[in-house]
Image (cartoon, rainbow, N blue to C red; front, side, top):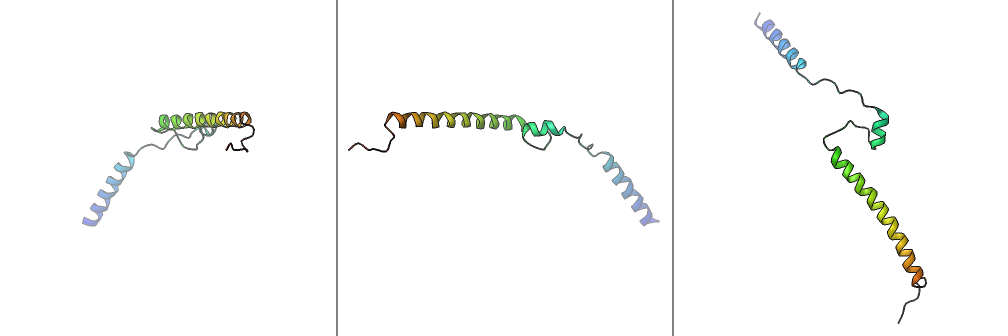
Length: 85
């Protein structure tokens, strides 16, 4: 009876541990996840991720404007192919 008692005790402990587990996560709206650019649920890092996304967007705009300014400077210099000596 001793092995039978141990196995019952182990089953009871496992049942209690399973009952204490976290519930399954709720399914996320797929369109919302795609809008955020990822397939995961919201995390504690969402604020940092959004900050990085905004910084990338600003960088893209800045680089686009830089290309425009560079082209204008080159045009004012006469094409930039001649060097003054």
